[in-house]
Image (tube, rainbow over all chains, first blue to last red):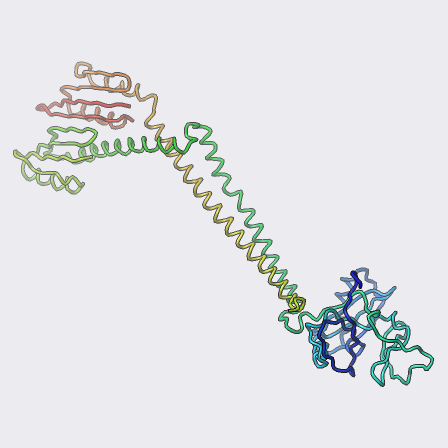
Length: 310
Length: 133
């Protein structure tokens, strides 16, 4: 039992293979019938660079190039490019009774070229052989009689393979996944930064408040603040009211109106205006009502009285 | 269920959840900060209001300012009694100009008016004034 490698059964998939009825998942090795191989000596150093140019290498070699995926790896001084169409592979496997969810990994025969020390028979007519380090299918008649026929098995399993994900059951392909994920992650980053950077905005207000509290230490306690506020707000409100009353009454003195008496205390005020005639007195009452002194009334001798609570 | 088949969707879903969490974090942060700021602003406004109220109603110079009310009219017309932070003043025979001047001065001072009485005698006025500060 291998804890490092892939311990699944490895099946060799070729066009004339028999149908399977699997109760467990398997690995698949594909013959060259399902991929296009190209080996190139390229002046590139890194795998990502080689992967980038892979589609251009198969231009004209494969139809509908957009549908293809590529497996790229380095073999000594050469880059090996394998172009494959997962949809074709998946449909073929389904036609042979192998469901995509039963396939753990897909490998290409070329990846195990070193294991093909002899021919591997494919049905009754064809065989898989490695010629000049390239795995190809040849007619069985071309196989030399003295060649040892190899039995295909798990020992052919290469280290890396591809998965069928994105073909059956999956709505998104690799490119769409990467694109969408990149967008979402970019937005996540933006939102996190935005949220994080929003913090210092309130510092100015906080600093201003701290400064005020430092200047007035007696106001540091909220309870004290409330108590002081209640006291002085009441005083301020009452005193403003008293002054407003005096100013309003002073504004009511016009030609023919004199002040007879005025009395203001904490709770109420009382004022007596002496008017020159009844007409002036009436006008004064109207004016008083207009400024909300509803108690204004004409007394005897054209005297107008106003008595209101504060 | 073979989760490997849905690896792409899983990756997109995880990144989407990450984005939504980030959005939630941002909105929460903004909302909590806005609340905090509003609270701080309100407290700062209240503090300023309180400080200005204190400045008005605990003015240490009021006592000196009140003394001016004694000299605003000829001393013969004034009966003055100032004890601590309380004042009782009686003015007699004030002409309208003197009355106006006195009332304007009283109203402009930050004192608590306890009583203000004005009585007309022919063409002059008598005033009684009680206040504290």
